Amino acid sequence: MMREQILTFLERNSRIDLKELAILLGSDEAVIANEIQQMEKEGIICGYHTLIDWDKTSSDKVTALIEVRVTPQRGQGFDSIAERIYNYPEVQSVYLISGGYDLLVILEGKTLKEVSGFVSDKLSTLESVLSTATHFILKKYKDDGIILSKKNKDERMLVTP
Amino acid sequence: MRNPIAEKVVKIEPSGIRKFFDIVSEMDDVVSLGVGEPDFDTPWHIRDEGIYSLEKGRTFYTSNSGLKELREEVCKYLQRKCHISYDPAKEVLITVGGSEAIDLAMRAMLDPGDEVLIPQPCFVSYLPCAVLAGGVPVTISLKEENQFRLTKQELLDAITDKTKILVLPFPNNPTGAIMTRKDLEEIAEVIIEKDIFVLSDEIYSELTYDNEHVSIASLPGMKERTITMNGFSKAYAMTGWRLGYACGPEEIIKQMTKIHQFAIMCAPTNSQYAAVEALRHGDDDIKVMREAYNGRRRYLMHAFKEMGLKCFEPFGAFYVFPCIKEFGMTSEEFATKLLEEERVAVVPGSAFGACGEGFLRISYAYSLDDLKIALGRLEKFIRKLKEKQNMAEEEK
Image (cartoon, rainbow over all chains, first blue to last red):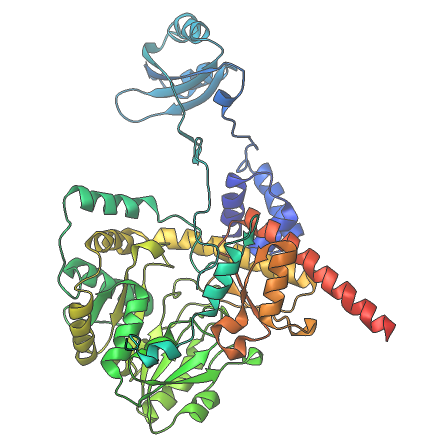
């Protein structure tokens, strides 16, 4: 219960001050710190990332979603082919998916050319890959639960009963 | 020309909050802790249902007592959360906000001279509604040492032969106080023995922390003498949709419906469809908001302790009610000074009844970031006051 509460806060703001988190949850700072450390050890907490709207910066980035159909391998299922793919550092995420294809690969590159190069040279040439379909992301509206373009303004009256 | 205005309306004092609002709205750069409504948006699936109902062209009146589906969902909800069973056909009325339900109950139940017991500090509507309905409001001053709960003795002391209704506003605006099952059982005894009725305003019923809300109508012998009123404003962050309801004995609801039928016709149709969705699929939204409020509540209590501002720990609604008596100012003076010097708006406790004098209502229906800014300013203000007090003492 406590763990879930901690995770809910951290998921929204991983930079939250531990003392503050302890107050919000009605607990002790030491208890919270210990739980977090434990969860890091157990691999429940896998990292602390920053959500960036790269479109607002001067750096160019292209993100592509690639649907990959593969032949599962005897005794290993999809795991070994997934590993071949996720080891490439330019691959952001790899998910095993139910439905019309098997793996969803999210790839980040500097240019369209770079991404298409990866697909044609590396991904499609893997032996168990049957086909790929690449979709480029044109605009991110919402990422990781955060609406990127939204500005919050309090429009309530200042004093009400 | 003749005087166009009715005397009983002139005699009603304008809300103290209104006065304060007028000052605040003329100032710039004000951080407000003064609102009485959630900071959350209505959850999207509820708004979406409202939009959908408009798209479908559901823009007609509903039946006077409200959509049948909505009344059924209200009954299921009250069964699920408060363990009371009401008949959706006869014991429920959908109203324009909880406020209308208060007004209707008073008008349906009071004859001239009937007394209405109103525990204060409380929401500003009960007293004028009682007066407008021809009743006589009798206030009960709740005390901080009882955590602003209504005690059996206080109730006994206020009851006369003319007492007809007890207003029971818990969880309470402005104090944040709640009544536990034991507290309610004690007063229920008196209510039954003295044969009076209860108007239980449970608009904040979903916002209790560490204690589950108990409806007085769920106690033995109380359902037949209680109007339970609630609504969607606080639980689902739906203040602007103006939707509430009253549940109670058929004979009272029937008369309330009659007044509602002639005065209002029916609650907004669009809001009613959205509310059906809220009751069917909104339990998780409430949970998320409640947890957020609870965190802020703890944060405020901690901050008050650090800055040396006395405050009893409230377990309901989204208000804290700190005591400022030690600073030798009235609530209004304190609030005005805080506003002028530090640009923080709070509501003087005296706006909620004379016994709220010496207290402030601070709302935590704000994001933690906003609260931090406001608390920083409040802390500075308190520190200055304390320094001044210390200097004055040294001079002596």
